[in-house]
Image (cartoon, rainbow, N blue to C red):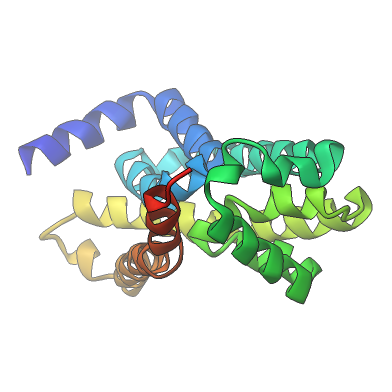
Length: 213
């Protein structure tokens, strides 16, 4: 508990570090392949919990900015390179994941762009896939921005409220319904993230890695 309190104290005293951390977590989640291994949702929740509650607006803006830049860069990379990017390293090492993302995008179109933001393993592949398959920018970006604006508060706000609950552990404020709801949301989001990684990304990645080149 002393280690946790120390971390809370450090990040509370340095809000810029917290903002930089959530920015990086949201950005790295959008990097093809690498994003499948980055537990961005869990990191954002944890950092939000450790940061001071009054830093919530800055954390929210930093998270949104990281996700927008990450998704946008991945999409533009795919849009410029077309299908060649899906057959180039490192994507070429994970054909099952690429094929699954392509099927997901082909089947659902713009909805795939929106809902992929909420599915940890797939969101690292759908933006670049959308670009590679020629989805026009005027269709991709509005849906992507809407998804990020819905996704970011679902991670930052519960984390910040949960952190506030930890700081008031044992007091009457800890039992406030909003605090308890935030803790429940954190548990659900972390559980969902872990389950999606175990269900989707890790088996396919493990199978691809195990295949001879």
